[in-house]
Length: 218
Ligand code: G3P
Image 1: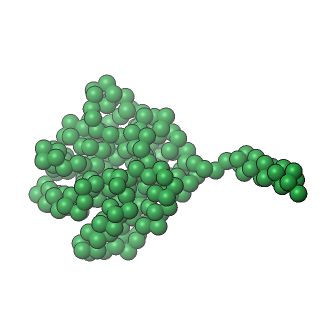
Image 2: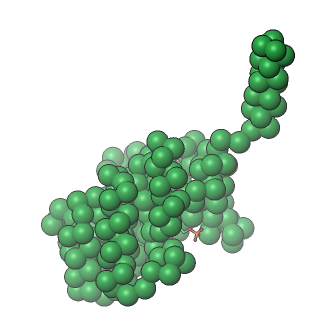
């Protein structure tokens, strides 16, 4: 399973990259706004910087919701760097644009996915990645991980190439469950990635090893 970081924060991207486990980055308009990145030129410069920080795929989301606008933005975004993937919302015009971009060799990430039916449509349209939002489903008291399992089963049966990118990850447990459910990629905030490191028995065990070493070497 590939690890993407879900942020537009450059320090967080560097920290995940320096851990040696980073395979890519996903962003969205909310994450860009959170970093204070506003205006077309600033957004473009920010994507250029992110693409210099990682060789992995970088999802850059379109703002347009009409077919021509999505295509226009997508074709501009991929000029930024070869590792840009165009993130397109799961709407009628988005599906049409994903099909067209696939035909042009432009890679896409179909986002805001909440059902298996949407997942089938995105795969049929030729999306490179599919982003089901686990945490936001959990927020509504439904089981987000069940959707990952369902899509993984369908894609395996049907032989679809689209990669399942588990998104809206909120915890280290979500990452573990995504791996078990068959996600190809998981995109998560830095704190969820770092959460994988933590176990109290590791801390207790290390403290004991170091104390014993100290005692034996006085
Ligand atoms: O990038 C899309 C997704 O990961 C958003 O996550 O936490 O805002 O639901 P969240």
